[in-house]
Length: 118
Image (cartoon, rainbow, N blue to C red; front, side, top):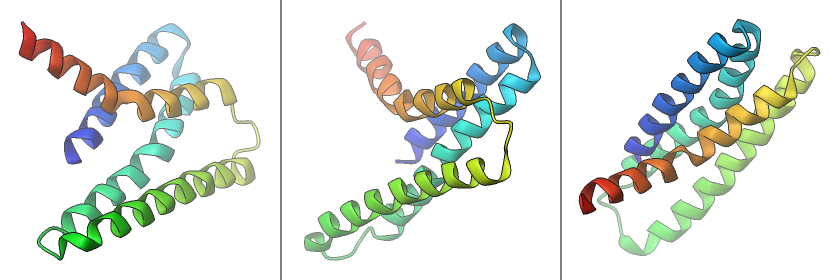
């Protein structure tokens, strides 16, 4: 799970750098804000799963699904905080940052699969 969080951080940082060079630092800051809204709950979820290791295997599905539910709730809460405290938010870069951060773990699995076949 921590590798997924690391891939989210690396891909999001690369996207922020590209956005800063292409559109400027203001847009890059909203890309970063969107990525942070996703990465922090995902990191907390990974930590919760790591802390649960070694316990009864029957409890894993409950911990997993409750963790996923809490992760989604934290992402929605993060968006709510942005709506409340950042009135001039640029929503397109923010949503792009969120989407890229959400899809980064899938990209790392895809690239690892390609490297294994090569």
